[in-house]
Length: 438
Ligand code: GDP
Image 1: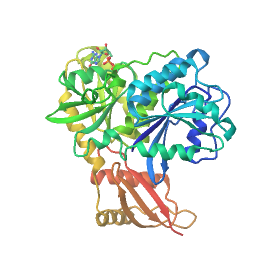
Image 2 (image 1 turned 120 degrees about the vertical axis):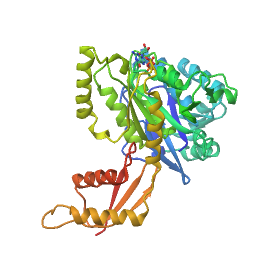
Image 3 (image 1 turned 135 degrees about the vertical axis):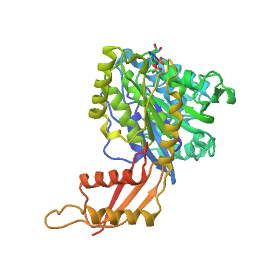
Image 4 (image 1 turned 30 degrees about the vertical axis):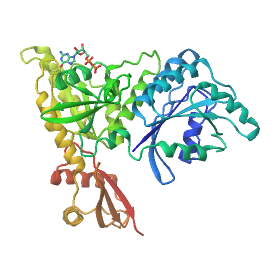
């Protein structure tokens, strides 16, 4: 999906605008800065067009941190979205922070809409007009809270929004899109350098812009791949606060553009909450997944500490990563190059699972056999029956079951397990939805 990102200082009304665009009533809006929200990307729709809406304002800093925070928002928006909505509080006017961001946005060459918020009625429109002087073109006066002007704004956005994301559209039949993810220092940039070598084609150079590269085209295992958001790998966000939020924002936005994620884990460190959060973001995105265990050279065979760490690592994997046991695992060293040749087959397996389609006839034969062998447990003397099933979509494989009642979560997991036993789906999540017929 094409991506629209919302950027602006704290309290200008970014979340109100998000809610308005999503058409939600339960506003997550609060007047106090510092409200954190756990989601950053939403599926939105306007005039029958679907797009992803990225809310970059989920972490709102105290006064000291504002500049860095808004710059980080702008950075993600510029690198990873197709259109940017830059929100200014028209009642306050432009501040020094705003002017700094405007420079970044103007240089980016991305379509930017200047949104003059808090224009609750027509008498306030001159306040919006004053924002012409930012040099971002016409200000769009809106009231995110009351909805005024938002429809007109979205109409304009739809005129410049590509039907598919710029990245995806360049890629139909082209290189497949991979995101390399992981917490800082696990070896992402070492992996990029070792596996992809120096002759990488930087996609942005083609367009003639001077910014840091966003995506790079590389040859791996005799095939071309598009590595998305390599800028995010090289750039360190220098923030004393909020760095985790911007790292997740970047991860979520990169996943929007990717088809498969390589999550890099440092085997010399215990598996951490941050590692698990990144895997959760991949699962939430529905993308294919490969897990690369890096720095394997540090776990020497003949070294006692190395042996100990290996044993612990296996236990940690069993305990913390059992829910993604379906993801191909590669044990690599970005330093020595060990087993880097295993990465491409793993990516290919994961992508072909992600693309896989099971014909409806076969899927229903599979379901009848499964039900005959293991019927759903009785619930209050009754038994929900599966009437019919079909694979509604691939990428990721999404199945719909028509049933006479709610299927227990345990039974649904059993169906998923069985699907994996029979059809593989290695490296891909499986989505199982139910439609209950009375
Ligand atoms: P990033 O933040 O994930 O991009 O991590 P870097 O690629 O910058 O690597 C962080 C540190 O780990 C650097 O000092 C690397 O030299 C080191 N490193 C990365 N991969 C390996 C590896 O496979 N083995 C060893 N021993 N060190 C590694």
